[in-house]
Length: 308
Image 1: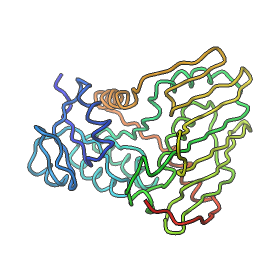
Image 2: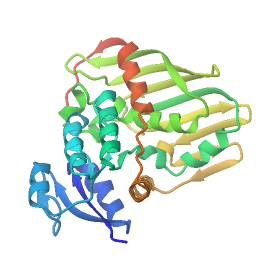
Image 3: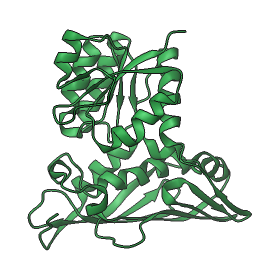
Image 4: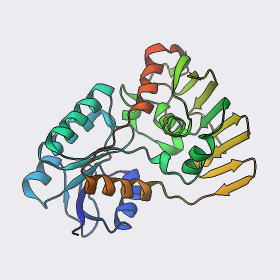
């Protein structure tokens, strides 16, 4: 079977550090091209400054991975789908729920695969956590996702603009895990979003959810963390406490602790290949819906201006 010829659209740090190794490590794919107006790409790989140029001049591609900011992703995805090209959407899958829904409908119409790729769901501890929680009664959940924005997103103005999500850019990773491992749906009850006076997106947020069985879920997001970073989900159950740490790579159960390897993007591309070969899409918007609910219902507080 011929490999799936894929192009990476938007060639920043995440593309270089995660997408390129994952593609090159998966025999189902071949890296056909890169596209970026701001980067020269990789030696030996055809490069264009726009998707228009790639589609007009080649090389031919079967799929694209969109690693651009979410605010510009809809038009690129729609353009690819119009050619019958399969589309991998980095998280979050779009700037709005409505545009992701429209892309899903378009993919179904043309028979192409659309994949909303929640990379944190493929962290090594997530699948066993989901399996362990399936038969448990959830009593309480705590999510603490605190990191230093200056380390992870230096100088990225788009992330502070409407549609860029602010602290929910990392926070949505936690929500992608929580919506996947918790056995019952949950919904927002109240939230406080903390916005720097010079930014349109929050730098911190405090959120309270409740699942359909009544279990409380508290989420603490902050982009001002220095020193050790925190990416932890703790679930108290009738059978003891489960904890996922390091973004889902380390799983602690009452019987012991498992430390896993970094397999997130390898898992994503394995899933994408399976979807393409099977003629299916996977477009789960639950994590984005919860973020949208926070913006819809949350109180706003203003804090000091933020400067890189």
